[in-house]
Length: 319
Image (cartoon, rainbow, N blue to C red; front, side, top):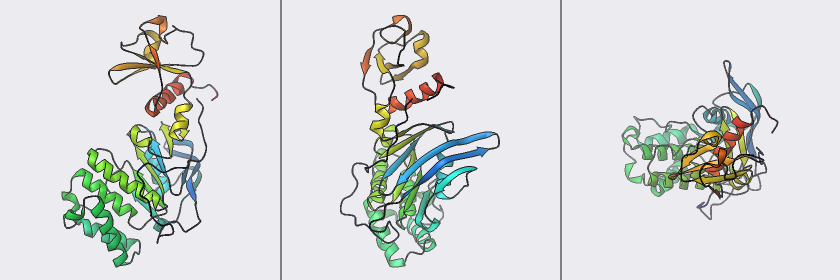
């Protein structure tokens, strides 16, 4: 499968306007660094968590990393944040005090209040008290946390804890913001608030990289890396990954049989089947011609599934 490249050049829809560049702790005026990794390899004993992975995380943009459990997403982000070291490869990141990191948990202290969590983080990054308080107030008000400032973090709902964790990670306006599945398991309203925070950080000039299990969220990112079992399956702008899908995708109202079943997946009450280039089966894309099928235009979810199927089908063949 072709793996498109190219530097991403957009931020997700809904980014706030009018945010000045060169804010304290942010990216200086006229400077657009690109952080990331090149040829990254990480071993856990005999298991390769990441193999020769390259990812660019440009300033002022959101970069998404997609993959299932065990794909290597968290390992990649831990290395980008400086929480772990690779076995091989190059890592480009700013100093620790210019990095914001939200681990897979909310990254907050349950026995501290919302205000105390933020004050503690601000002190750790050396932020002046008045500046930290003003920025915290702005972010808490916009995300619906202002009324809970005196509540213990351990008493917050899951969505509120995640919002507090993101606010805490971006409070000091880091140059690199690393977020590990910030929206997993939260309600739709909290997801919208979290994406406002994410877009805000990018608009302020931060290089934002996040992992997600939601394909619709990945489509909002400027660039996407798809991981599976430590390998990069596809990479580039969402539209580039979609355009790189080899062959065609067809849809059938019935469950497919034979060879086609290996290349089929259920979606929205119907079945989709990937027809590789040069496939010599039935004209409708199913072995023996079972069931009528029509071509459909793939989206990012289809492209990710096809990338995984192509990896399995063409294992050992040159890409």
